[in-house]
Length: 360
Image (cartoon, rainbow, N blue to C red; front, side, top):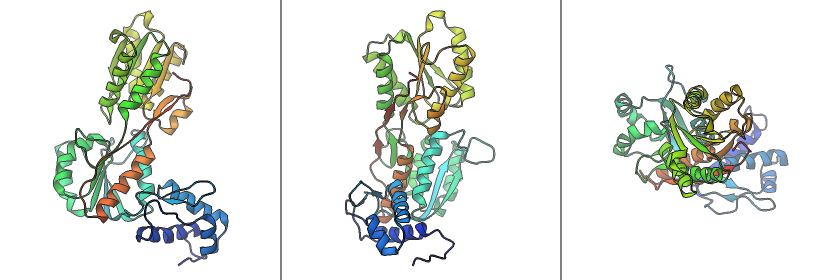
């Protein structure tokens, strides 16, 4: 029922009505959905309102739109989520709150999760757990209160995986945990890092520095970067690896400045690759402090592609991971398991995208 005088925006009312039809089983993946003109006629609204409804549904990966064609129903539409969902994460502050500034990559994935959950008949809660035995104990206490789980931070996923499998409820981890082949959504970190390294090797840098830290895909990124450099003829003696306490720019700046103090003048030109984009903001700060040209004396590239990286000075070349899509897909997997009374599905890996902004 559409109420034009309701406090709920008109486009949201229409979207909810259309979602009911999608989740009813009337449409199958690949079927044509209602067009803009269909919605105008069905609900007596303007084309602007109808277009916004279709745009929101497309951004939530419910339909795929193409110019001049009817929208097409996407794969996960029939897997509507109904139930109590717990989004598990590791808090880095004493208040137990999620901090986007501390975990920007996970924050962008979370935006995708929340956006998709907004279109579903589900209630969801954010729960901060410690990545140790205390976290396992807390999870075991609350497991009966929820129908399904999304583990947002991989370091917590490594700790909770045995408990998640044991509880026999639907769950999805963001990024693959160890060698477990089910219930994850991730990106091809190895391939992305390999592409960055191949590009850098063709720029004839004298030395290469990899800044790493504990986190999702860190081993895959390092291995991809190293192996690609060596395949392209870079001498292993020209590769340096340094570990940072976190991806924060402050920690990376300290490590990079210490690295420069330890090395000889023959270090440049130097290529720097970091596990997290925010780390390179700290590297850029030290380069400005020491009057090192970027690019030129120092080139750099990030490995996640957070939106803020395009605003760095200079804008950062990145290997972009589809963060929102990862989050949306995780919800879709949960829905499929809940509707079909399943506890597991094969994991999904998305490709990364190399975006050259001239910093490498």
